[in-house]
Length: 316
Image 1 (cartoon, helix red, strand yellow):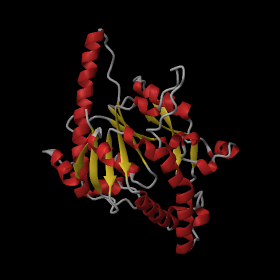
Image 2 (cartoon, rainbow, N blue to C red; image 1 turned 120 degrees about the vertical axis):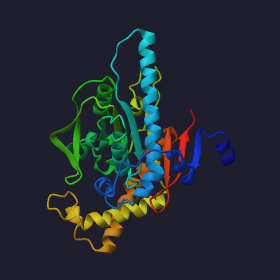
Image 3 (cartoon, rainbow, N blue to C red; image 1 turned 90 degrees about the vertical axis):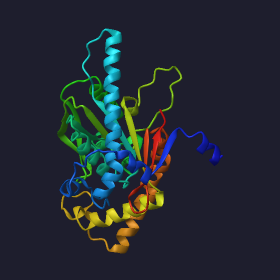
């Protein structure tokens, strides 16, 4: 069965070296200071990784964006319309601790520095989590990050407004310090050329409606989607490493939701992180996040050292 799956796979597979060759003459537009600014806690990435993986990807995405604009113009001509172009939306999914935020920020910076200097915005779906008060009332605090913990209607309204080309579309803001949505705070997305939407479950689908009139999925608004992948054992190790780093840093802030963990010993911290990983994040990964991987247009597969080892690109 595995051999059959390989034969009929909808993806082209590239080794690290094969993918790097697709960079062609794409210029390197990031320096170390950029990387230091964009990198999340404990993410191991260097300029060589950017040159090897992310420059070829930015080149591919730019080609896709330009091709979509050409199709848009042709469709307008065919329909005798004069609609303005709408943002090209890139979705990015993957597990907790896999490095989605760093990858999204690097792609945002690279794409914005292409010769045409497109306007590239980035939104995370963390802001669309239901407030803690609602999660507690519904008994969902232990399911935070699972599909049912998000305000799906709000996400869909946001995505619909973006894809309709509306101006000044607001997205809520999430604080990782207080572990809650910030009341009365938002980011404004104003007709970007490209929008990156990053989150655990952005490739999630619902059950097909029997009458064919079901609500859309977040991914229905994507022009391109990326899944950042890694072995669950590596993800667990990275999550524990990040927890230990946060214990010695952000958790010490008196307003941190996790301040109670700041005084844990190394042994206690590892045990706590392991419990959280195995009872929440691993369950969500297996039940909800990993099953969406085949829906992505591109899969970036990381090795234990956090560097991309293989790239899978969906065939056209």
